[in-house]
Length: 301
Image (cartoon, rainbow, N blue to C red):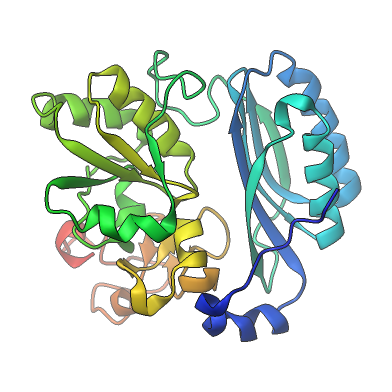
């Protein structure tokens, strides 16, 4: 099996110095929607393998597939991917990689869940139908069309520190609120072209499956998610604004997947940008513009 290395092209020159100087901690984000009737067996297998390979992170298993992010050595990540892809159902499993200077996770969790990404809409099945994939290189042209609704499927605290230019924030606090947003705001616009995006692509698989099931017939999603876009598109050609929230100790990443400047507020858990840390409504480990009693998080974000 050929080793899966992150490709660093001309669009990532700004990240090269970081990549060469940081310690060799590889972060692999992966998912696949596929029927896994034996997910409990896989849980034991992956728990043992990750312990042996000294990997840290989270892997979620359900009858609908696998989802997770793990970090460790180059050899450890390659061995885990080889184990997964040895199963014919997961042979074409795709993953995205980035690097970190310090360990982004404190422990390893392998869990069996009802869904690998919780939407609460059983009819939304990405193995049956999904929206049209759009490669990062084609994404700018799509979302620049004024007739296209660009819809961020992530949570409000993720959107707050960065998103695509002109993207709509549904203002949801969990993905389970996404269907209610569609019913409330877009129920009468089923002929509208909708371009969705999320961090790594998994939420959009279900979001577009749900939209198609509701009668929307022109639905698109960013292939590989924001992470693939930031990896491939150079800053000078990018329509991304801000940083991308990630669910690990890095908190956020920027173009080239270099760790960003955001930190987490210990009081409320929101990501706090460098600009917000200069605010009078910020006090380290006490409050931030999102939870300060005299600050409105929606207007200071």
